[in-house]
Structures are given as structure tokens and as C-alpha cells.
Amino acid sequence: MAVAETRAEPAVAARPAMARILWLRAKPTVLALIVPLLLLAFWQVATANRWTLLIPTPYQVGEYMVDFAVGGIYDDAYSSTLFTHLLASMSRVYGGFALAALFALPIGMMVGRMPTARMLLDPFLQLMRPIPVTAWLPLSMILFGLGAKSAFALVCLGAFYPILLNTIFGVRSVDPKLFEAASMLGCRGSAQFYKVVLPAATPSIFTGLRLGLGLAWFVIVVGEMTGVPQGLGAVIMDGRTLSRTELVICGMIVIGLAGYVSDRLVVALGNRLLRWSPNHNG
Amino acid sequence: MVEASPIIEISHVSKVFQLQQQTIHALSDANLTIAKGEFICLIGASGCGKSTLLRIMAGFEQPSSGQALMWGRPIAGPDPSRGMVFQDYALFPWLTVRENIGFGPAARGLARSQVKETVDKFVELVGLSKFANVYPHQLSGGMKQRVAIARVLANDAELVLMDEPFGALDAMTRERLQDELLEIWQRTKLTVVFVTHSIEEAIFLANRVVVMTPGPGRIESDNPLDLARPRDVASPEFNDVRRVLGAKLHSHHEKKAAA
Ligand SMILES: Nc1ncnc2c1ncn2[C@@H]1O[C@H](COP(=O)(O)OP(=O)(O)OP(=O)(O)O)[C@@H](O)[C@H]1O
Ligand SMILES: [Mg+2]
Image (cartoon, rainbow over all chains, first blue to last red; front, side):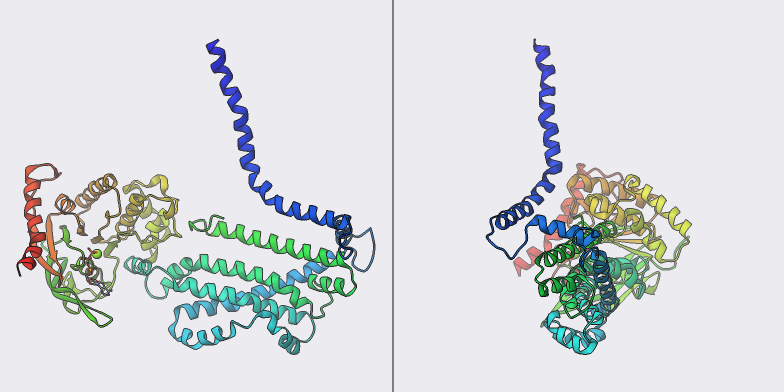
């Protein structure tokens, strides 16, 4: 009797324990999905009940997305052009971002560590900083004309400041003790820049690159609204001009997803590179 | 072999800091001669210039007047022959235990195989083989300080300068590290200058205790200890020394109170 009871106990206890473990695993995903699903449900209800006629139903948008991606449903001018547009936008985002990093990283390092460079450049950079990227649009259209160059320039400008400011911050806020430690171990002068300043600044620099890339995806839409033939921003603008709301929404979704995936990749890369940093285990 | 000059000679060293409008006399006319192989403890109230004296020996600060010499030559700047162990470790957080210990040998341009050999030896010496590939933020305070000690030893430092190295550790870890440090010192014939707030720690470790007093920072007395090792903190001899040094440490309070 007593034996049977003690034997039964673990079996009973084991089931809720398994369920608990499963729940703990699934919890983040489940919680993350609640808000989007509620919004989707609201969208469905609102369109099905004809509260608005301006927006297509989720199903229509989904159908159009398939056509946009692989074609075969509507076969219009936008069928199976998604990847062409995505590729055009991506090349501008990553190209502009790379060019921004190419300038912002060395300038940031110099402004951060060399007093002369700081006095020379910092006032100018701070003065230009409050001008929003979008305010550059007209000037960039005048300079580069309507088209891809203008979009590229805006993306570059948008990504420049986050990278610059975080690089300056990173190279300036190195613990002074680490310089003393390096010099008593025999690492002096310019070697300290590579062995101490750069590694110590990587978390900040990385944050700057991540913010810069995010902003590049943000700016690309504005940049591509200036009359480029290809690109997701152009698709969205065309959709509005042609009153094709499903095209507008599809373009938005693709930009959102592309930006999200791009950010996740950068974060994954950062977590690998910055394993040593207690603040980078996200 | 008898050395021509002592490893460290501090003569008439003063250090003045200018802080806003104030002039701070951190160190006033300090004299101290250290022979190779000694274990010196500096004790004294907060602000009496212990860290300043240590940093002058390290070459991080220059004396305002007087001379700091190593082997008879002026100390011009930091050098691998004089290793510093900081209270807050100052390890490179982006390097593993191995890489931290190998930093000095690599910076001095040793061949890769030599660096590896040196690192292996010192990782072993401080008992961190299991943690060799771990980053500092994953280590306990005691382990971090072991790495800091190993990285100085791996760089062939003749003189090890320690600024309250065990101040942030719990009592048990501190006692273990004290024992380990003594063992390393006895085995390697290092010269150690060790700053502490604890009279007991000073008497347990040192063969000379230098007592400093503040306002301005001065060397008050220099006390050779000839207690047998290993020392027993509960023995009557230990307590006699503790009483004498305690009186010296607090004497300036009474002098001030009387004045
Ligand atoms: N870089 C500096 N600039 C200005 N003043 C300083 C500097 N370093 C030390 N001092 C001053 O010199 C005096 C002695 O400082 P020091 O750090 O040597 O004392 P300490 O004996 O190590 O004290 P503690 O036991 O608290 O560590 C203090 O009054 C301190 O304020
Ligand atoms: Mg101090």
C-alpha cells in the first residue's frame, strides 16, 4: 500500500513537470504572437464587416503577396517582381550603409582619440546633426537628380550619424586603468590603439552599426520615393498613385520583414563577436 | 652575489597634486630602500599616499621632487619588470584567461610557441586550468585576482606592486590567496610591495612593514619583522607585533588630538 503510493507519486509529478518545461520553452513565442494575432483578427473583422472599404482583407493581401512574389494569380505589371525590388532596395541599403561605415568609423576614431581632430571636426559634425535626413531630400534631388543615386546618398547620410556618434563614445570611454595595465605589460604607444582602444570600443561600435543599419532601412523608403523605377519604396509609392492599397501593404510587409531579418542577423553576429561582454547576451 | 644597488631606492620623494584651487601634498619627503627578495607591506590611513608611492614605483606617476630609482636608474615610465596588481583587477574583458596572461609576453614580441608555453605554466601555477578559456566576467573576484597576478608573473616582473589586491574579497578567499602569494614569493624570490588597510594582513605577509601617516603623506616608521613562517595569527608573538604596529598607526591621531 505504502509502496504503491510512493511509486505513484513521481509519475503523477512528472506529467505537470513536462508540461511546465514545454510551456517555459514555448512561452516567449506564444507571448510574442498575441499582439500581432489580435491586430490581424481586428483587421479581418473590420474589413469583413465593411467598416472600411479602403483596405483589402488580410486574405486578399496574402493572395496578392503570393502573386507579388511568384506570380500566377493576377499576372499584372507587379507579378513576381518582389525579388527584383527587394534586391534593388537591399543593394542601396547595404551599399549606403557600407559607405557610411567607411567614413564614420575612421572619423569617429579620430574625433574620439585625437584632440586636434576633435577640435577640427566635432563642432561641424554637431552642427549638421540636428538636420533630419528627410530634410536633405530636396537638396539631394537637386544634386543627384531623381533616381537611385539620391536614394543611395540619403541612406548613407542616415546611417552615418549613429555609427559616428557611437564610435566616438566607444573609443573615448575606455577605462583608463586598462591603459595602465597595457603599458606595464609592455604594450605602449600606437600598439595600445589596436590592443586596447579598438577591442574596448567594439560593443559601442557594434551598437552604432546596428542602429545605422536600422536607420538605413528606415530611410530607404523616403529615398526611393524620388522616382526610382525599382525598389520597395517605389512599389509603395506606385501603389498609392494607382490606388492599389494591397500593393502598398505588401511593400510595407516586405520592408518590415527584410529589416527585421537583417537586424536579427546583425544581432546574432554581435552575440558571437561580443561573447566576452556581459551586456551582450541578447 | 651582492647587488651593487638596491632594487628600489626612493629618496626624498614628494608628490604634489593640483586639484582645482587646492594643492594636495600626497607624499612628503619619502625615503625607502628595498632589497631584492623583500616582501614589504605599506599600511596607513586612507589618503596617506600609499597608492601614490606605489604608482611612482610603477612609473605611472613622476615625483614632484626627489628621485625614484630601480637598480640605480631613474624610473621613467611603466615597464614589464615592474608589474602592478590593481584592486579592481583591470583585466582585459575581451580576452580569455589564457589571452590575458599571454598579453604581456605577446606584447613583448615573444614567439607564439614561447607565449603558449609561458601561458600554460602560469595558468597551472595559479590553478586556473579549468577556466583557461573563460572570459573575466565569468570568474569570481578571487579568480580574477589570480589572473591579474599570473599576468604580471608571466611577464617576468622582478618587482610586483600590489594595491590592496585582496581588499574586495571575502575573508576565506583572501586567506587562500595570501597563502598562495607567499608560496609563489618564497619559490620565485620575487620582490613584493603590498598595500593594505589591514594590520593583520601586513604582519602575516611582510618581512618589513612600512607605516605611513596622512596630512601630508609621510613614512612614519619602518618595521622589520622576524617572525617565523608560516605565521600563526593567534600566537602571542603575532599579537605583540600587532599591538606595537597598531599603536604606531594610530599615534598621529593622538598627536593631533593633543595639539
Ligand atoms: N590623480 C590625482 N589627482 C589629485 N589628487 C590625487 C590624485 N591621486 C591622489 N590624490 C590625492 O593624494 C592623496 C593621497 O592619495 P592616495 O591615493 O595615494 O592615498 P592612499 O593612501 O592610497 O589612500 P587609500 O587607502 O584610500 O587608497 C589623497 O588626498 C588624494 O586625494
Ligand atoms: Mg589607495
